[in-house]
Length: 147
Image (cartoon, rainbow, N blue to C red):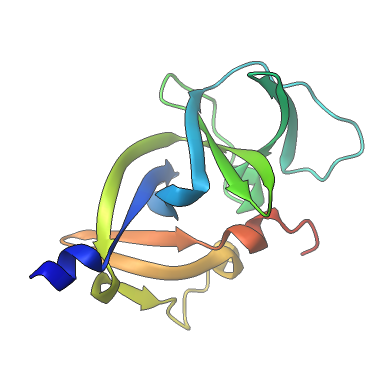
């Protein structure tokens, strides 16, 4: 039983459209309410712009646009998840940040070969948790501007 506790990783779960996605909590710096985003000309279409977050200029990526999902109006539950990757911080606009979950290694499986979804290249694996299916995001591919 002790091994199960040691073999768990915490994930931040967020929502886009009708699916749940997850990012390892050790890569998440903070979760922020939506705030004013300054547009930056000449950036790729999924980069909404930048925000000034506690004195740090942080680029903001709209995850719906990045995954080629239909756009939706921002709501009270819309959040910006600030992640740290390769010594840079980036904010992801998501529909909602649901919870923090512990996932054991045996609940995580490789991405199915027949995913067929446009966002498939951004998925590292999937996790089954009771009746929920969580899509684990591959941050390096999400942040790579070259498709």
